Length: 325
Image 1 (cartoon, rainbow, N blue to C red):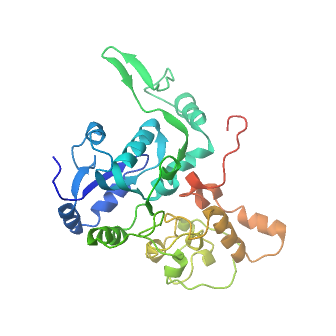
Image 2: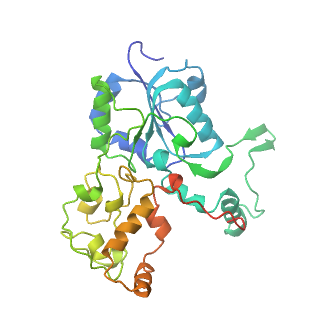
Image 3: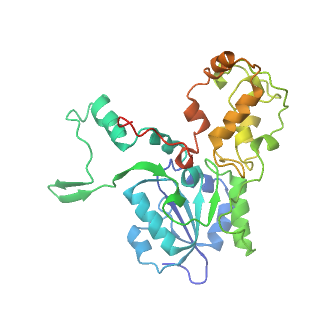
């Protein structure tokens, strides 16, 4: 039963890995302050709450809902619309809800191609009949129903109105707590539609590594070289998404001698993170010869998965609608 007088909190996990739920736990003892301030009315990974409980709530009953995960199936879409109705403030929490993240890379293929690969072309020791899951099936116990896959994974704001976005895969604990403290303080919230818990510049602006003039003549994967811990990773030929990624994470990956993956999404006023990164790559290649430039860029492994790893779900780029691919 909910506690009268306390603001109501909910969190939901749709198409994602669950790391955002762990990210909230990573605020550590500050979670006790959050739990003391809010009445947690729905958080499936933390409390025993059912969909029916949410359906029984009056519209606008939940004060704050953090929705993590993209919209990949009918259940995700149903819960997005239900929680939108029940929540005063709905937040796209994390990269999957905000941009699609890793699951959206499957948008290159579409659901039929995915099911065909999994159930017809992949080796199987437990499904020799290559039976595909059906939305509804008759069983001895009665009809069972499972969520139906959508053809594309889309971010939360593609199906419902979203008040705020908090980026990250997952958002770093410090930024999560910044947002929580802002809400718990009763201060005026930013304008609707704002990206909160993040900066207004790029990861490069937070990164202490030293930049040089353009000098790249070959690209490397991180495990192929021993990177200089003081020098810009991109200048060392390692694809680092820092120039095309919003600040706010404190450049934790580059400071750990690993390239930025791009999980905080595009910087302000940039609509296509991959295109922004292509521009950054072009600026550091040390050649004016088209053939040599083509040979250098051909060394980038999985360019689509590298440049759109977190933003494919909302990227202007779309897969070719030909030959079922």
